[in-house]
Length: 202
Image (cartoon, rainbow, N blue to C red; front, side, top):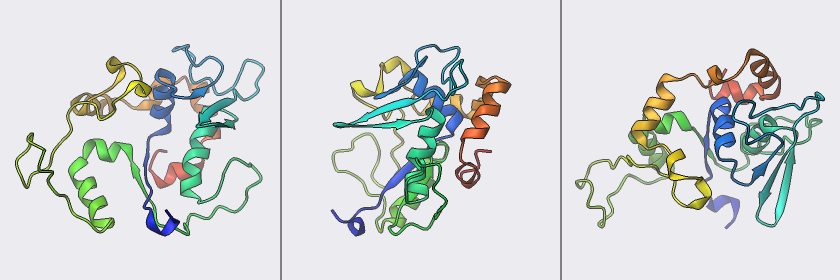
């Protein structure tokens, strides 16, 4: 496919909640102290150096200064349309040479029907009904109540949230409350302010 034939749709998650989620299930990422639930994500080591994160993607690997930097790098590639991994990168262009949608994870959790309808409309389609979907009446929206994640790569089933669990978890807890004031100050230094402002995560 060429860039003109693809519409990337990227779910962006509150970085404070995302980091704690990565501590529970790091996928292919690895860093020092990732399994210590009390100190994870541990952005800096005791020697005050960044706690590097290494992520395997297929046969390759990417390296990031910390888990917070991984957040900036991953979403920055879509947000800025160029790599943010080089701190000397002064060109911060948020106008992509290709279409893309960036959607807050929290919006798809709390407003799944409205977000899905908007995405379908943006992509030139509309919400349809699969003939094999017997769980919902034709012409109505099918809310996926169980965990939308499946497969071994998403960790144990007990660590996955369904729709109701997600409403409870993400609707009643400020993800920043899981961090010490020192950790919050350090994370504030790391997270890209333009990305944080654009998605109202400040």
